Length: 385
Image (cartoon, rainbow, N blue to C red; front, side, top):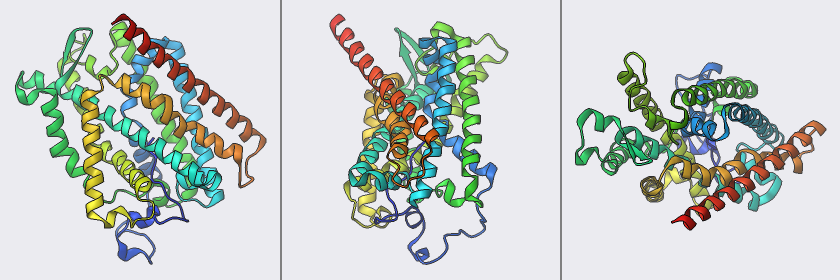
């Protein structure tokens, strides 16, 4: 799930001020024609954001771990995620912080807030690089084990300079991403726009249930369909005969629809990334929405980095190994557990502490194992080459 911005009530920026025009600073932040978000609308928005690029790597995870262990780990991850979000919401309300970073700042000071912001930046950068890699796979195809899997543009129009991976990703960046990331304001954080903010816990649980069901179904049927031939990005497998009626049409529908989904989610994640980078670099400057030069310089720099990364990172598996073992685990599990264990507001029960310890130890252990395996794999590959 994307993490929104890096500020709290003590600092220069708050989500309500950032996301509204300046003339509303002394008014109740209500948009014309809106009377708060509905439960179903909030669930849809949250679920759409959660179901990002990671889902396309899950069948490959199941291939590596085995069907039963893989599905069990997905369900365990869902349970821990729900507990993690519950910890964040509980402590944020108790500390009267309006953001995740604000809650961490209340417990661990500026150093803790800054470290969380760095983790969010690394995590979001990794996610956006993965988004672009998948979009490139969808449009222009990918190669694995000396086999080229065609993208939809190559299938429809043949091989031309403008159907090459670099050309299509450049065109996507200029004509789709550039306009979308140029907006200075996006939809308020979900909890701020609810008619009844106390529904947030139920919304999170419902969204996670839906997303977990989608994850399990994708993992199970993706691996069942392609078996040992499952690629790191399972979308790349949808380039041949599936043994089903209208197989070619189904291939295109699956790839194009998910590619469009990522294109629309991309600016939401980018919005959070830009605000956190700005918060790290210019913590005491005026809000970035009121400084056009800073806004466009940071936007161009980040988009350039993502574009270059997407063209030089070999696969989504490599990107997930880097960010998943470090920043994602820290943002998703280590910091929420640390909030409860530190408990500066005195709200944690014995059960909360026990769960927090289990979450913290599991997160640290899995991070160490993942990093060690990555280092060992790189050493083995280098030794054989």
